[in-house]
Length: 120
Image (cartoon, rainbow, N blue to C red; front, side, top):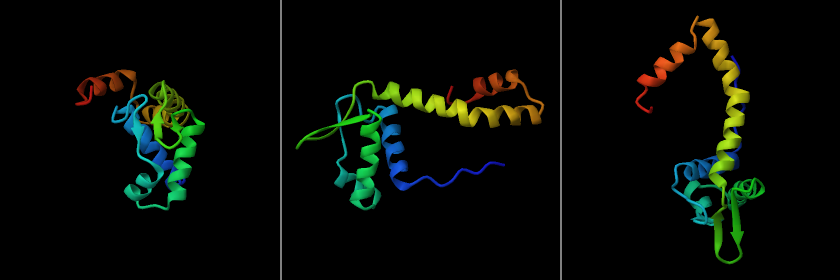
């Protein structure tokens, strides 16, 4: 079994903001919480919250308007989805396929489970 290392808190905060963008809690050109607001919400040091914002700025997910705040970049949802899809295919799918083979399952089983899923 493969165990992933625990992610840094600032990475988790950045991922949470991305989740909020994907779920359209925050849309393009909409303001996201400031560093201070994030620090208070997650009960972390402002430097930790700043590192999360820096990751998002580096990846083109958010941008800063001096004196106004931090906003969602145009195309942020597309960028997040593309990055997460790439990560999913590279890291999650190989283990998923291995488990399917070990259990003697095929794609038909996956399709049937997909159809029965309450989320589909």
